[in-house]
Length: 222
Length: 222
DNA sequence: TAGATTGTTAATCGATTAACAATC
DNA sequence: TAGATTGTTAATCGATTAACAATC
Picture 1 (cartoon, rainbow over the protein chains, first blue to last red):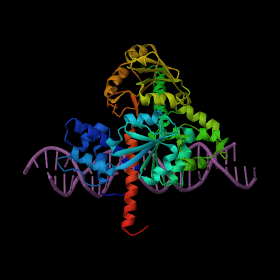
Picture 2 (cartoon, each protein chain N blue to C red):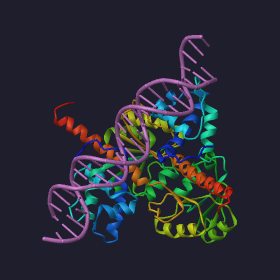
Picture 3 (cartoon, rainbow over the protein chains, first blue to last red):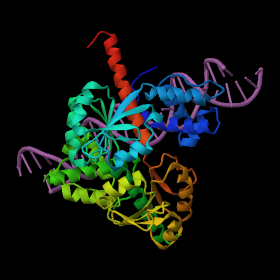
Picture 4 (cartoon, each protein chain N blue to C red):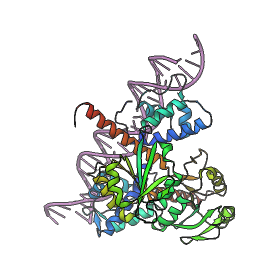
């Protein structure tokens, strides 16, 4: 697979293509053109083709793209076939919501363990995943290959836990705490899920729309 | 406030400025230059100044920006002072996680009601929010001003619930289901929180890094 | 074959960065 | 005042779009 430097914009679109292709496959669609795919995602056909061409030639001239083939190529690009493993830190509401509703394996990631400090949880299983005590984390990391740490601990302990993780050489953190973990020097990859940023972006557009409506009303339009 | 068309990139950075400014204020910092602020967020000083200049003049030449003032200006831009109201649909794990851990009021949004179909939940309160039956949604919407619907229902009913919401003229949906709700024709604003997209982007970078390491190893470097 | 659609190069557009006069 | 830093214009860079030859 080609592995040239690909812009973040392109990377962020790849999972959207994947989901759309899964949906198409479910509906029995087996071929699609860049134009059709673009239309369904609000992109131009040029952009769709440019995106794929970052990674090689996926289509067939005069025909389009085979849905199943394209899906597999994208899955491979995203590393879904590499058997990445993840552990989850903090079995609170968000942690449980992920363990219960988020199907890690659908995305090629296997959740191998969870950690918490609550004695009642330690030693139990939740959705087939063993819950360890937080004090076993260090040992666990030294004995097992872990690619991704899912951080769902309370804000207050986020930085501390991150310390243990990076000290143990964890590659990547999927961060659900509202704490900014991205330090300039660190080599740990951090992907933030900032709920508040998401909500506030939405609020901006709601406010904008309401301003526009008010402006129209002031001009006497309806 | 100026309200020219501002690019999505700028909008997405505004909440990040806000969080950083809150953090600075907590630490007793009361002034900051575009350069310092940029450094802490991985942006150039030019970009910081350009971003703010989309909305007016927030700083003072030769001095910088007053943290408290700037924070308030950005809060206003994001609509945090407008008393937006939200309702939450689906009191499952994700719904509960939000009600419990996500402080809506911190971001200027008040969560006024929740809805579910589970008889055991209906009529109860959770974290001070009354839980109604899903069949009361229509009536509730006709009697109350609701700006944002937080969609945390199971995948299977997402489209159905969205139908009720849009029929009732809901402006904005904060979508936690992995279902693509953005239909071309709709006037409803949709902000998606796609966990899988986020995880897969992270996986891409993990895979990329591992490929680079393998390539270095193959070249005999360490 | 003719029609369709890719892969890819060239043109355009927009966003980021640099520069600097204004000014606190 | 001198130094610092903004607001803003100009230059650069990168991403998106358009165009079209290649080819199925």
